Length: 139
Length: 139
Length: 139
Image 1 (cartoon, each protein chain N blue to C red):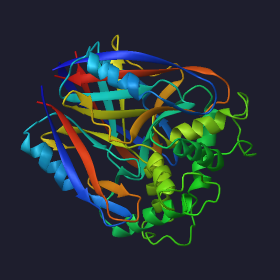
Image 2 (image 1 turned 90 degrees about the vertical axis):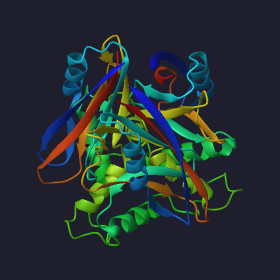
Image 3 (image 1 turned 120 degrees about the horizontal axis):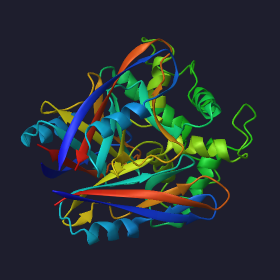
């Protein structure tokens, strides 16, 4: 068994889902592993990772709409407000989704389902440079 | 170190939790790994994975009841409605739970706690055939 | 590639976040792995794991405040009530966060971001002894 790591840099332009499925696939393909495990990890606490449908873009619209309602800005009991009104909601939305996702590799590919895409889920309004670390082990 | 993969097929019959702990344990046991890591990954975006109590079935009843209230059908602002009223709520419930779970193996067994079971969490009303991929590495 | 496992015991004193970042770092350092993957897994269903900001303690206050509001005690439709009013909300809060988190290792360290800490998220009111299993593989 062998392993590899790679860092992905993603420039975000506000809240929403940024697909990184192709970068993940390229990382797996470039390492020519037939069977293994690839792990994506995001190094931030105000964005997160999500595997979701990559077919109908309306799904992303509704995911954004739901999280904006579930964790709205302006909750008046929040005490962590110094980094802006979108910062603490961003931390909470990150806590409700994932920081790391492990995906098996079979026949040389991550076993994402037909409709599954891997996304960076940005929860801040302003542009940010985000880093995802990919780790792969297998043979 | 060596590794193995296996695909599990689960036929669901509506919303709720479907326990796969025994299939996971059998996969680990059949590979005779003493120490390692087993990862479960579900290849869909309208069902998910969950580790929860496997003792009192009332816990499952309440989990279903909570998610039905937290992400109800009929939210009138949803735009992804073409696949039925339960489809977009299913995507959201999947986003709020997990798509992959990694469990260490010690002394030849996944280290699930006494009351922990691994479940497929089905969020669609109609029957579906679901696939979970298990990956194991260790020695 | 080689691997290691270790069990951490954490004594909780009520609801809230208990940081285990240093124990994770010590486990990684003691195994002298340069590149790899470390996985944390919690063996309970009424507490969970969370990676969150470790800079401003107000973030933790607000996370506790949010989960107390999102999953309040006293929801009158709950049926699993025999273990106390905080037990079923604890299971639900655990379902909404994580049971396992995988973190890549680069240059001998888990690649946690500058502001990221790993926490046990205790959802029960009374003190509990909790167990986290750490697994590491790499070289």
